[in-house]
Image (tube, rainbow, N blue to C red; front, side, top):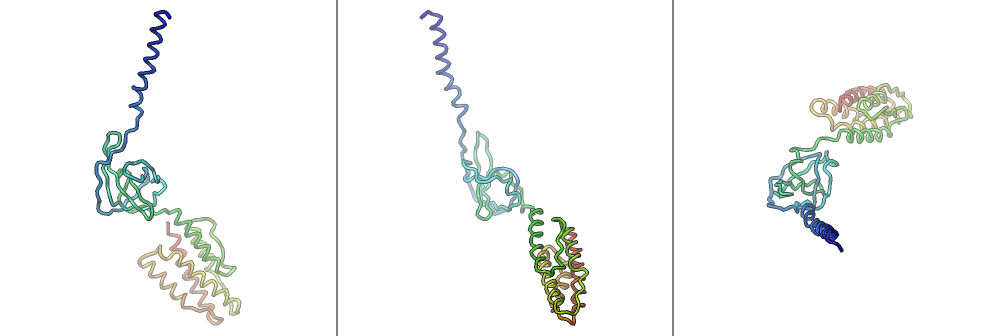
Length: 238
Protein backbone atom coordinates (compact mmCIF):
# COMPACT_ATOMS: atom_id res chain seq x y z
CA UNK A 1 0.00 0.00 0.00
CA UNK A 2 1.54 3.34 -1.01
CA UNK A 3 2.06 6.20 1.32
CA UNK A 4 -0.80 8.33 -0.10
CA UNK A 5 -3.38 5.56 0.39
CA UNK A 6 -2.21 4.94 3.99
CA UNK A 7 -2.60 8.63 4.78
CA UNK A 8 -6.17 8.70 3.39
CA UNK A 9 -7.20 5.56 5.30
CA UNK A 10 -5.91 6.93 8.58
CA UNK A 11 -7.78 10.20 8.06
CA UNK A 12 -11.07 8.36 7.38
CA UNK A 13 -10.66 6.19 10.49
CA UNK A 14 -9.99 9.23 12.63
CA UNK A 15 -13.29 10.84 11.50
CA UNK A 16 -15.28 7.67 12.33
CA UNK A 17 -13.68 7.35 15.74
CA UNK A 18 -13.85 11.01 16.70
CA UNK A 19 -17.39 11.85 15.40
CA UNK A 20 -19.34 9.87 18.05
CA UNK A 21 -17.44 11.53 20.88
CA UNK A 22 -18.38 14.92 19.42
CA UNK A 23 -22.10 14.29 18.80
CA UNK A 24 -23.14 12.14 21.79
CA UNK A 25 -23.00 14.84 24.48
CA UNK A 26 -24.97 17.28 22.29
CA UNK A 27 -27.79 14.78 21.65
CA UNK A 28 -28.08 13.55 25.22
CA UNK A 29 -31.26 14.73 27.01
CA UNK A 30 -30.91 16.94 30.05
CA UNK A 31 -32.71 15.51 33.09
CA UNK A 32 -35.13 17.63 35.11
CA UNK A 33 -33.83 18.30 38.61
CA UNK A 34 -36.32 19.06 41.38
CA UNK A 35 -34.74 21.71 43.60
CA UNK A 36 -37.56 22.02 46.16
CA UNK A 37 -41.22 21.24 46.84
CA UNK A 38 -43.55 22.88 49.34
CA UNK A 39 -47.21 23.19 50.26
CA UNK A 40 -49.10 26.35 49.38
CA UNK A 41 -52.41 27.86 50.45
CA UNK A 42 -55.18 26.35 48.35
CA UNK A 43 -56.09 28.58 45.41
CA UNK A 44 -58.26 28.10 42.33
CA UNK A 45 -56.92 28.37 38.80
CA UNK A 46 -57.86 27.66 35.20
CA UNK A 47 -55.91 27.57 31.97
CA UNK A 48 -55.90 26.82 28.26
CA UNK A 49 -52.24 26.01 27.50
CA UNK A 50 -49.48 23.72 28.70
CA UNK A 51 -49.19 20.08 29.71
CA UNK A 52 -50.06 18.46 33.02
CA UNK A 53 -47.49 15.87 34.14
CA UNK A 54 -47.67 12.97 36.58
CA UNK A 55 -44.59 14.14 38.52
CA UNK A 56 -42.46 17.23 38.98
CA UNK A 57 -39.74 15.52 36.93
CA UNK A 58 -41.97 15.96 33.86
CA UNK A 59 -41.37 12.39 32.70
CA UNK A 60 -44.96 11.55 31.72
CA UNK A 61 -47.65 13.85 30.32
CA UNK A 62 -51.11 13.01 31.64
CA UNK A 63 -53.29 15.73 30.13
CA UNK A 64 -53.27 18.69 27.75
CA UNK A 65 -54.67 21.77 29.46
CA UNK A 66 -56.23 22.88 26.16
CA UNK A 67 -58.82 20.12 26.63
CA UNK A 68 -59.76 21.41 30.10
CA UNK A 69 -60.20 25.14 29.48
CA UNK A 70 -63.58 25.05 31.27
CA UNK A 71 -62.26 23.15 34.30
CA UNK A 72 -61.46 24.83 37.62
CA UNK A 73 -58.35 23.46 39.36
CA UNK A 74 -57.09 23.84 42.91
CA UNK A 75 -53.34 24.26 43.53
CA UNK A 76 -51.99 22.76 46.77
CA UNK A 77 -48.22 22.47 46.20
CA UNK A 78 -45.42 24.07 44.23
CA UNK A 79 -42.04 22.86 43.03
CA UNK A 80 -38.94 24.65 41.80
CA UNK A 81 -37.12 22.73 39.09
CA UNK A 82 -34.17 23.09 36.75
CA UNK A 83 -34.87 21.94 33.20
CA UNK A 84 -32.19 22.27 30.52
CA UNK A 85 -30.29 24.55 32.86
CA UNK A 86 -33.22 26.94 33.41
CA UNK A 87 -35.20 27.30 36.61
CA UNK A 88 -38.97 27.09 36.56
CA UNK A 89 -41.89 26.90 39.00
CA UNK A 90 -44.49 24.15 38.84
CA UNK A 91 -47.87 23.95 40.54
CA UNK A 92 -49.57 20.75 41.67
CA UNK A 93 -53.23 21.07 40.67
CA UNK A 94 -56.27 18.90 41.20
CA UNK A 95 -59.85 18.77 39.95
CA UNK A 96 -61.96 15.81 40.96
CA UNK A 97 -60.00 12.63 40.18
CA UNK A 98 -57.58 14.47 37.88
CA UNK A 99 -54.29 15.87 39.19
CA UNK A 100 -50.73 16.62 38.18
CA UNK A 101 -47.94 19.15 37.78
CA UNK A 102 -47.91 22.07 35.35
CA UNK A 103 -45.74 25.12 34.81
CA UNK A 104 -47.35 27.87 36.88
CA UNK A 105 -46.95 30.37 34.05
CA UNK A 106 -49.76 28.56 32.22
CA UNK A 107 -52.28 29.10 35.03
CA UNK A 108 -54.72 31.98 35.47
CA UNK A 109 -56.19 32.89 38.84
CA UNK A 110 -59.85 32.21 39.51
CA UNK A 111 -62.55 29.83 38.36
CA UNK A 112 -62.80 28.69 34.77
CA UNK A 113 -65.33 30.41 32.49
CA UNK A 114 -68.63 28.73 31.65
CA UNK A 115 -68.79 26.57 28.58
CA UNK A 116 -71.71 28.53 27.14
CA UNK A 117 -72.24 26.28 24.14
CA UNK A 118 -72.35 23.14 26.28
CA UNK A 119 -74.78 24.80 28.69
CA UNK A 120 -77.02 25.83 25.77
CA UNK A 121 -76.95 22.30 24.35
CA UNK A 122 -77.88 20.82 27.74
CA UNK A 123 -80.66 23.38 28.17
CA UNK A 124 -82.04 22.64 24.71
CA UNK A 125 -82.09 18.88 25.42
CA UNK A 126 -83.78 19.39 28.81
CA UNK A 127 -86.38 21.67 27.23
CA UNK A 128 -87.30 19.08 24.60
CA UNK A 129 -87.65 16.45 27.34
CA UNK A 130 -90.04 18.72 29.29
CA UNK A 131 -91.98 19.47 26.11
CA UNK A 132 -92.73 15.79 25.55
CA UNK A 133 -95.19 15.81 28.47
CA UNK A 134 -97.34 18.59 26.95
CA UNK A 135 -100.48 18.01 24.91
CA UNK A 136 -100.02 17.32 21.21
CA UNK A 137 -101.05 20.91 20.36
CA UNK A 138 -98.31 22.34 22.60
CA UNK A 139 -95.20 20.62 21.32
CA UNK A 140 -93.84 23.14 18.79
CA UNK A 141 -90.07 22.71 18.88
CA UNK A 142 -87.50 25.53 18.55
CA UNK A 143 -86.17 26.13 15.05
CA UNK A 144 -82.57 26.13 16.26
CA UNK A 145 -80.46 25.79 19.40
CA UNK A 146 -80.69 29.38 20.50
CA UNK A 147 -82.30 31.12 23.47
CA UNK A 148 -84.28 33.28 21.06
CA UNK A 149 -85.91 30.23 19.48
CA UNK A 150 -86.41 28.55 22.86
CA UNK A 151 -88.27 31.69 23.97
CA UNK A 152 -90.34 31.64 20.79
CA UNK A 153 -91.28 28.00 21.36
CA UNK A 154 -92.48 28.75 24.90
CA UNK A 155 -94.62 31.61 23.63
CA UNK A 156 -96.09 29.59 20.75
CA UNK A 157 -96.93 26.58 22.91
CA UNK A 158 -98.71 28.33 25.77
CA UNK A 159 -99.84 31.71 24.50
CA UNK A 160 -103.15 30.84 22.87
CA UNK A 161 -104.54 27.64 24.36
CA UNK A 162 -108.33 27.51 24.19
CA UNK A 163 -109.49 24.65 26.35
CA UNK A 164 -113.23 24.10 26.64
CA UNK A 165 -115.28 22.56 29.40
CA UNK A 166 -114.76 19.00 28.28
CA UNK A 167 -113.07 16.03 29.93
CA UNK A 168 -110.51 15.71 27.17
CA UNK A 169 -109.65 19.40 27.52
CA UNK A 170 -109.13 18.99 31.26
CA UNK A 171 -106.59 16.25 30.56
CA UNK A 172 -104.85 18.38 27.93
CA UNK A 173 -104.79 21.39 30.24
CA UNK A 174 -103.29 19.26 33.01
CA UNK A 175 -100.56 18.03 30.67
CA UNK A 176 -99.76 21.54 29.50
CA UNK A 177 -99.72 22.93 33.03
CA UNK A 178 -97.35 20.21 34.25
CA UNK A 179 -95.16 20.57 31.18
CA UNK A 180 -94.89 24.36 31.65
CA UNK A 181 -93.86 23.80 35.27
CA UNK A 182 -91.16 21.38 34.06
CA UNK A 183 -90.00 23.92 31.49
CA UNK A 184 -89.66 26.54 34.22
CA UNK A 185 -87.57 24.05 36.17
CA UNK A 186 -85.13 23.93 33.24
CA UNK A 187 -84.52 27.69 33.36
CA UNK A 188 -85.31 28.98 36.86
CA UNK A 189 -81.77 28.74 38.25
CA UNK A 190 -80.61 31.09 35.50
CA UNK A 191 -82.65 33.95 36.97
CA UNK A 192 -82.07 35.97 40.11
CA UNK A 193 -83.31 38.94 42.09
CA UNK A 194 -86.74 40.42 41.42
CA UNK A 195 -87.01 38.57 38.11
CA UNK A 196 -86.67 35.22 39.88
CA UNK A 197 -89.10 36.30 42.61
CA UNK A 198 -91.76 37.35 40.09
CA UNK A 199 -91.42 34.15 38.06
CA UNK A 200 -91.50 32.00 41.21
CA UNK A 201 -94.74 33.72 42.28
CA UNK A 202 -96.34 33.04 38.88
CA UNK A 203 -95.16 29.44 38.96
CA UNK A 204 -96.64 28.94 42.42
CA UNK A 205 -99.97 30.40 41.33
CA UNK A 206 -100.12 28.04 38.36
CA UNK A 207 -98.99 25.04 40.38
CA UNK A 208 -101.84 25.60 42.84
CA UNK A 209 -104.43 25.45 40.05
CA UNK A 210 -105.91 22.02 39.45
CA UNK A 211 -107.63 22.00 36.06
CA UNK A 212 -111.29 21.08 36.19
CA UNK A 213 -114.19 21.78 33.80
CA UNK A 214 -115.17 24.93 35.73
CA UNK A 215 -111.80 26.70 35.82
CA UNK A 216 -110.22 26.09 32.40
CA UNK A 217 -110.48 29.77 31.45
CA UNK A 218 -108.51 30.69 34.55
CA UNK A 219 -105.93 27.97 33.84
CA UNK A 220 -105.60 29.21 30.24
CA UNK A 221 -105.10 32.80 31.37
CA UNK A 222 -102.60 31.89 34.09
CA UNK A 223 -100.52 29.73 31.76
CA UNK A 224 -100.54 32.44 29.09
CA UNK A 225 -99.39 35.17 31.49
CA UNK A 226 -96.67 32.97 32.98
CA UNK A 227 -95.43 31.70 29.62
CA UNK A 228 -95.17 35.25 28.24
CA UNK A 229 -93.05 36.36 31.21
CA UNK A 230 -90.91 33.23 31.00
CA UNK A 231 -90.48 33.63 27.25
CA UNK A 232 -89.21 37.18 27.69
CA UNK A 233 -86.76 36.12 30.41
CA UNK A 234 -85.41 33.18 28.37
CA UNK A 235 -84.94 35.39 25.31
CA UNK A 236 -82.57 37.61 27.33
CA UNK A 237 -80.28 34.72 28.29
CA UNK A 238 -76.88 34.17 26.69
